[in-house]
Picture 1 (cartoon, rainbow, N blue to C red):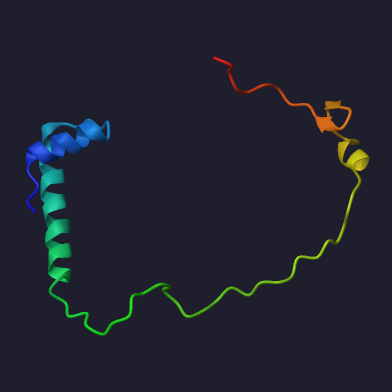
Picture 2 (cartoon, one colour):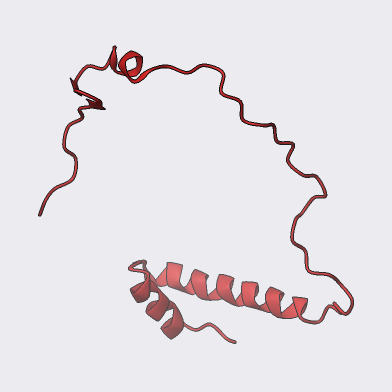
Length: 97
């Protein structure tokens, strides 16, 4: 695959980007270099190589979730600046339009 200015213009339009002619030329050059590198990877013999799922052999050490401190609903609402019976009151932030 070869990247040309027409393809760059099309990609810029689809991604809603705009840049000058000099930057477009740099993009053509850079994308062609990237694609040539990826094509070079296809030359590598990968017969018998398992797909890589994780980069390292380590696994996460997880602990059990234990409830340590439980507060009641009234205690949780005690210091709320605004509350409405059982709930926090917050300003509306979504327009209905």
